[in-house]
Image 1 (tube, rainbow, N blue to C red):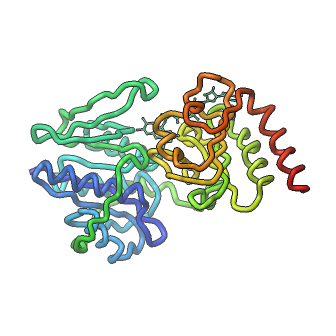
Image 2: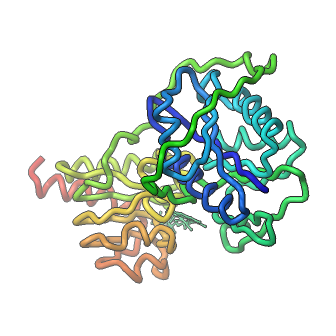
Image 3: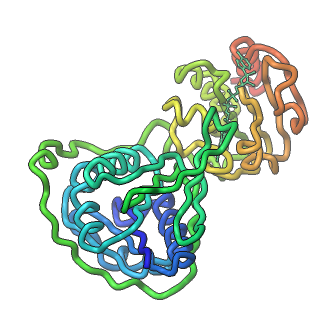
Length: 326
Ligand SMILES: Cc1cc2nc3c(=O)[nH]c(=O)nc-3n(C[C@H](O)[C@H](O)[C@H](O)COP(=O)(O)OP(=O)(O)OC[C@H]3O[C@@H](n4cnc5c(N)ncnc54)[C@H](O)[C@@H]3O)c2cc1C
């Protein structure tokens, strides 16, 4: 029987969406393998009811490890102990920077195989096969594990969270030892990135920026235009720029981000990849600015402007300000 251990990130009394997706995916895969998915949370005073609620996402048991939250090394210690004691065949992470760090550390500790940026997993002949986009997402590679333990690290939000409304899961305490090096780092502060508190799903006007902005500072052009529109306007982003660290994940539109339908979606320097399109195609009006007349985004835009956004966005901002008399 192949059981799967899923790491769930707990912060401020809640488990993040990315982790809930990983638990749901783990439960689905474990059922296909004839096993169970269990979840592990690490933190100081993790509420029992929050841990138990993972039963609704398919976890059959939840382990709580008492230790410093939000750091990779203590989690490697806890996951390694749980996997060794519990004989788990696979460990699954929802992704994100912490997931990458823990997964890599765990693979080294256990001599396990690891696949990162996984976008799909399937059960085949009693084993899991992970799919990972390669070559700039133009092809998919398939990964099978030869090692006794396989570590799967998803792409951020690649797995859908499914609340089945099932019963709470039993919760057990996991005792484990922190390695000497795991106590060397402490969390000093934790906060949100610029723009992380913006409600893009409720905005009437979204000014979305892509790789065509050139650099993180390029987003100032989008922010200035959104400010000129005023009211219920906000700035959104593509995955490419979120992955590059130019803008926070909270603003990402698309398959692995948010789905929006504002009155106006203004796309600046965005090519219009299918994974982006699925998150914004229901917008009432789509206006695209792109210097490439053949960019796919023009195929589903109501108005297309071919040109350099560095020239067009400031002029548009001035025009909006003039129209509003501000
Ligand atoms: C499983 C999976 C999930 C994904 N999920 C998402 C998702 O949720 N959201 C998402 O957005 N993507 C997602 N992607 C990635 C997606 O495939 C694209 O790579 C991404 O959307 C491209 O972002 P972009 O348009 O900013 O960059 P690019 O594709 O690089 O496009 C940049 C555009 O800017 C234009 N440009 C450059 N300079 C200028 C200028 N000065 N003025 C005007 N235009 C200019 C270029 O002509 C180009 O069209 C996903 C991919 C996979 C495989």
